[in-house]
Length: 267
Figure 1 (cartoon, rainbow, N blue to C red):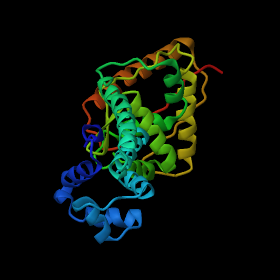
Figure 2 (figure 1 turned 180 degrees about the horizontal axis):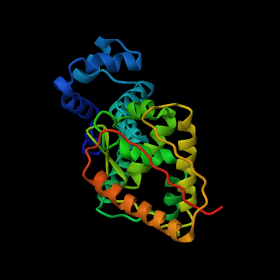
Figure 3 (figure 1 turned 180 degrees about the vertical axis):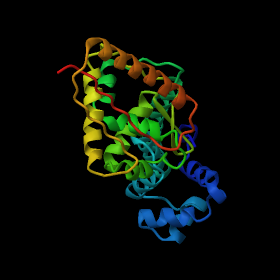
């Protein structure tokens, strides 16, 4: 459900409710509990003419998993609906249109191939969680801030911040309140100065995972002495394996996320 298709916050919320499983049965009650309201009051808001306070609206935006720009737009719609003065409503209408334009511009930027700016690349490759969140968005059941945060054992506020980054830069998009992977293919050349940051970030995550003693994990370390010829053979086999790995992954159904780190270097 795209909030930027609405100019009335009640219509947006009611449409969102209907888009949920069982046409949103019980959603008003869960919203009321999250916002600290009675079920009667929130029903009067979305089925009548009662109003949300801005604090309540902010809590509801959090329940709906709205990103920062979407939350700003939602709050502007609430302020507009509450306003009584004509000049003030006109002022709010201009602000709504400005934020709406930004939101629509972000949608048009989602193309088959988008080159990230240098600043965006620095952010994206600085921490493993950006890639992890993007990959998780391809798996049903892990497309909300809460579910992603719980799966990755990553702070909720940072998860939301990174989700918004991914949407802004077209690497993911929001559909019906869910984060889904965008169409972009991301590749970082081996000679990029950011490659080391990417490798280091994921290796640190791998070192952290070592302490979990998960039987599905595999760690292999084997210092060795060998001939230059055989060293070249092993490198070729690793390259062949990597090519085969991408073929397998390309045809694999999204169910889990994993990471493989291969280090092969001279001492």
